[in-house]
Figure 1 (cartoon, rainbow, N blue to C red):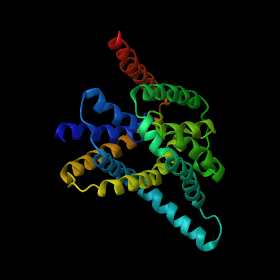
Figure 2 (figure 1 turned 90 degrees about the vertical axis):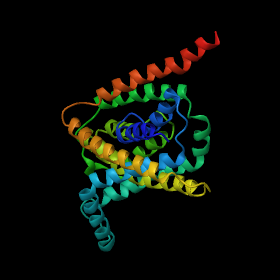
Figure 3 (figure 1 turned 90 degrees about the horizontal axis):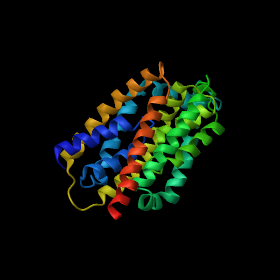
Figure 4 (figure 1 turned 180 degrees about the horizontal axis):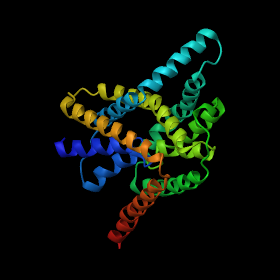
Length: 272
C-alpha cells in the first residue's frame, strides 16, 4: 500500500471507530470514492487492533476496578461494587455474536454497497437525533442484564455498514433514559469484547493466507489508528459535557445525502 493510503485509512478508522458515524462505512466508502484498491482484510484487522489498544488504555483504570469487583463477586457469590456492569457487558455482547455467526457472510456479500450505506447513514442519523432528545440522567450503575441485552440487540443491527455500532448502542441507551456520558461509556465498554471477537475471527482468516503479510504497513496503520482513536475518544467525552449529539446527526445527514446522490443519482445519470 502507498503510505498516503495507509495514513488516510488509519486516520479514518481511528477517528470514526468510537464516534456515532460508522467506521465500517467509512472504510468501505473512502477507497470507493477515491478510486483506491481495497485495502484488504489484514489492514482492517491491524487498524482495529490499534483502536482496541486505544480504548483499553483510555479505560485502563476503569477496567481494572471492574475486574477487581467482578472476581470479588465470584469469590463472595454476591454483587460487589460494579461487578454487575461486567456481566451486563458480557450479556450485551451475545446478540451481536449470534447475529454475526448467522448473517455475517450474507451481510458481507450483499450489504457493502454505497446506496444501502447512504440510506442507513440517514435513517440511523435521524433516530440518533430523536433519541438524543429523550436522554435522561441515568448512569451506568442503572444498567441491568435486561437493559444490556436490549442495547446488545441494537448493537447487532450495526453489522450493516452505515448503521454505526457506537451510534446505535448510544441511541438505544439514550432512548432508555441514560445520560449522554453514560451511554457513551457503556458503548465503549461494549466495543471491547466485540472488537476482540470480531478481530480474532478475521485474524484467523488473515493468517491462513500463504503470502507474506506487509508487516510494516500493518504496524504503521495500527499505530496511527490507535493514537487517533485515543485522542478522538478523549475529545468526544469532553464534548459530551457541553454539547448534544446534533453535530453528529447533521454530519450523518449531509454525508448520507451526498452518498445518495453519488451512488444513486450519479449512476442514473450515467445510464441515461
